[in-house]
Image 1 (cartoon, rainbow over the protein chains, first blue to last red):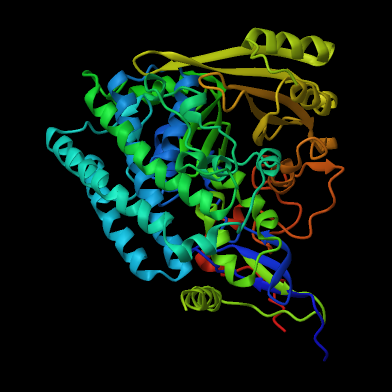
Image 2: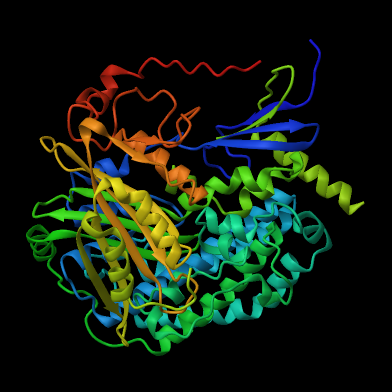
Length: 408
Length: 192
């Protein structure tokens, strides 16, 4: 059988970059990707369907389990939607605690991503180092919420735990340490010659495409879309802060919309989150943390209400939106979860086009995809109709070899 | 597209005037949080199904919108309608000025069709396909999908997870699975 280009190479259902199932099919000529197609939905869990037979307080705990990294994103967006329908006023202190925990989540999520990106490039030392640094923020999150993942801190009408005095001390110590480490983080990720040559000009998403595909978060901002909900659409304590969206120009260079720019945005957002937490801690109002402490009363208020609302939150990966409709019943009549990656996954075919096979792991990872939030990549070498399934390990090995070649 | 930031009232007026009798109702909802209680605005406009493409076109003349997603639900087992929301936002990137604009419309189950808006916003395809998979709404103008995006590839046809009528998920798909075992699959993984 003669082999003629192009070929179709399927990757998956194991993700080439992350330990989550998604299927991507790439049409390649030699090493170059001509086109890409993706199939998520490999682990559809039917969470929205489950929600339609549960009450809002039960759903809050379900939302905490949509994603392992976004432990507060979904619950915050859902709670904000229900609070608007039932006209529940959230105490100011709860708004500030929500903001603090959301920013800690951004720090841990961006550090997790930075570690994964280093791993995809073959810098496992940097991967271990980043994740070691991340442990400190995980400890703080555990101190505040009692959990490392699935924080379960949000409740309809406020938060379930207050920030104790002992936590404040640990938070300040963690933030001071991170401020000292920021220079090092910047140097390791942004000044390294190999990271520069492997990420600059790779996986480009143009401003026009970023807009037409309604992308969100660091993926959009790296392409020059300055949208950031925390700035544009005041909610929780963000309206009290003077924030500016982080775009690649923050590092003193032009916007290219490539993988490198996405690293720049995320690294600088860590520094921004540290500042936000400090400001919120200083201005933390006193008072109650819940609109109503008795769950039965919260449920009674939700059961009496009817109407529809959307709750939004700027998650580490971008806009997360929950649409909820209630109609004087225990369970909502409609619940739609729009995770951040929902708006970003569909640019894979655009940014993978023209890429080299060995660059696929880092490009796929560069949008920080969260499959558990949304829900496989196949590389097809076109011609001869032959399909070879690459495992995640094989692709990562190709990526490592490319880095080693460049280091020589 | 104008560069001037219009007030929520002017945006609502402009859209309801242009769409005329096709507008069923409209309301502006605001929410204020934090110490300073700065407001954010959501504009809800209920429209007839036929004008959805025009509505999006008119919205694009005001500002290049961000499409969060198209949401939808089944109004009930006995209801002949599905409710669909086109969730947009405008003025993103302008500090404290972003409005959500949500077009709601009823789609009859007997003729569950919607026109595609991918000619206006290329990225709408992903969320439009979701409406086909979850609610069984055919999107006119969109080429048939080669595979499923949101559901497993072996998910049965003519069953839609978010429907509440006879096309809903049957009890046999979710109850006593330990006794039933895995369903037979057509997915054989065509490896070489």
